[in-house]
Image (tube, rainbow, N blue to C red; front, side, top):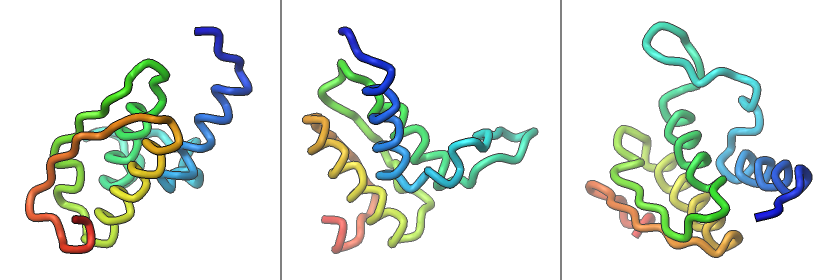
Length: 103
């Protein structure tokens, strides 16, 4: 797959914007020893990593909204949906007790 640096940069920027991560793009993710982005942002980083693949056609996401507020959960599902449409990718998502607006 011959992908130019410009195409990679465009895809990175699209994913960052779509997942609401542009403002933390230069922040470390962090771990138990180093404070970094928030828990919700960590989940979106994980989804963003999956969306960066140019070969995957199906994303499998399990309980990605667990612990998020309902508005954040709804926003994340919308962002995944938009990214999948743009990149012609399918997503299989399991959610525990999703709100009515997500369904």
